[in-house]
Amino acid sequence: MATCHCLLLPAPFKPTSKITCSSITTQSQSAKQNLLTLISDQHRGLKTQNDPIKRSSIIQAIDAMADLGKDTVTTDDSLSATWRLLWTTEKEQLFIIEKAPLFGTQAGDVLQVIDVEKRTLNNVITFPPDGVFFVRSSIEVSSSQRVNFRFTSAVLRGKNWEIPLPPFGQGWFESLYIDEEIRVVKDIRGDYLVVDKAPYAWKE
Image (cartoon, rainbow, N blue to C red; front, side, top):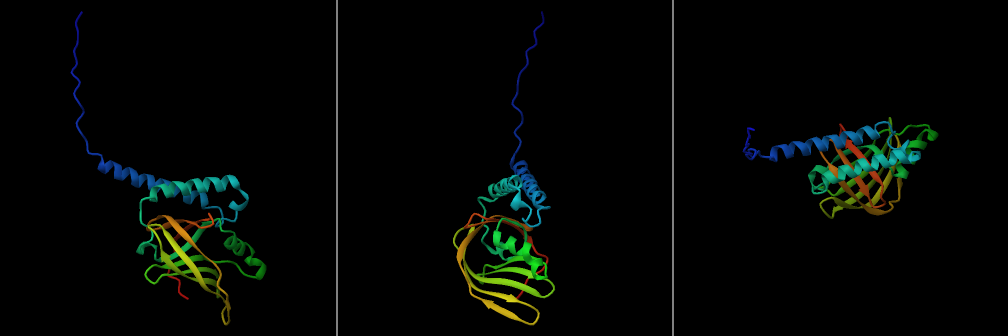
């Protein structure tokens, strides 16, 4: 019987760095799209309040984004922007969004306006065409992803009037993931926030 002897040679070495980079980019885009798809029909979080299964799925998607961003710095100049609410678990914001029609208005864009250099944060809820409620805060970067804040004043403003309100509270938030389009946040109370960059810069 004839015998065939085969010599097994090692496969040529192929650099993996390019593949790995591409894989990370693909993973990031996939995780991001999954999160945005999950929150796209949730009315900024109003529908999620009564849907614990959906909430769990969204938080899992946020955790996946946090894993991708865990070794990154998110408190540098990239944090400075007008950020617009896409989804949140924050009950106070959701209450105002939901109940605004009872006062004859609708909530427009809900914003976080951050300036790292000036150490300022404005939390803003707009009521088009002329109404706005905003809370001014001072901020201090405390780590690569955490920012401490302290409320300094609050204002409820209409077209021709303004009511100052007393400031209240302090805390911190962590930007778990940030890129050119979105930011994913967790705060001191365990609430979550998903925002995108607004196509405009909000000014007082």
